[in-house]
Image 1 (cartoon, helix red, strand yellow):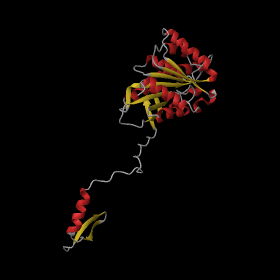
Image 2 (cartoon, rainbow, N blue to C red):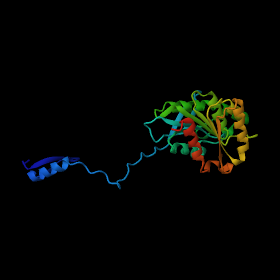
Image 3 (cartoon, rainbow, N blue to C red):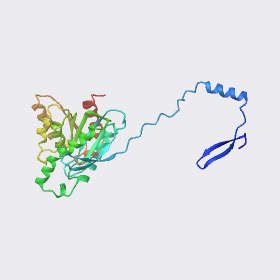
Image 4 (cartoon, rainbow, N blue to C red):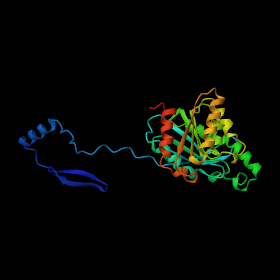
Amino acid sequence: MSGSEVALWTPTGPSQAPVPPPMLPTAALLLAALAGAPSAAPSASSPAPLARPALAPQPVKLVAKDKVELSGTYFPPKDMDAKNTAVLLVHDAGSDSAAVAALAEAWNKRGAAVLSLDLRGHGESKAERVDWTTSSEKEREVLWAMAKRDLEAGESYLRERTEVHSSRIVVAGKGAGAGLAVRYGIEGAGIAGVVLIDPPVDEEKTWGIDVAKGLADLEGLPALIVCCKETRKACDAMAEAAHKANDGYEFVELGILRSERKALLEDKRLSSTLTGWTKEKVEGGS
């Protein structure tokens, strides 16, 4: 190799490239001056830094303490470096987590971590001997009662996440799932609040759980009932009874949506109702 060439490394090995001629003094001085000059401030038209993209929902597999295998979906919060509010989401009896995806997304878009489980016998958590669709009415009541263990597994999963604030875990249930959420709010340790979304009213099936009594037994734990105009009277009565049972302390709020009951999850005010209550009652307005 001659003195005027230097080796450059490429994926296929060294290649030859000519060495540039020595820099003239004037050019060197000019470059040095430019290097020492302060950089120009970004113009007003410079684009803002890109926001961190939302993380995709993640499938999860959990095992309850009685060895029942559970499937679900975890919606990570936007800020994985912070301690975030988390929501443990419970679907209706005979339904699955896909039916409450809109609720999960509503909280998740506002920064919360959300775990939405298929309860035992439902969705992807069905098994040969644990299947809601083939169970008798009595067996369904037993399944629903044992689902408390599913919530325990879900809460443990959330508490182990470093991005979850352990004192800001909310349990939310849709339909008969509201009964499970209320009962878990009573029995679970360290739950920050309970949300009942379109809970059973009047003679509707609750699968062995007295929702109204459970609401009263929360004893002041922040609670939100989301309902439509059709069921407002019954939901209002539940809230009043809970307040009366707790010496008039008003800890249950009502979120009344304008949509018909069958379209409740599509109501445009649903997201702001859920997240507004969470921010005020669970996060202290922060």
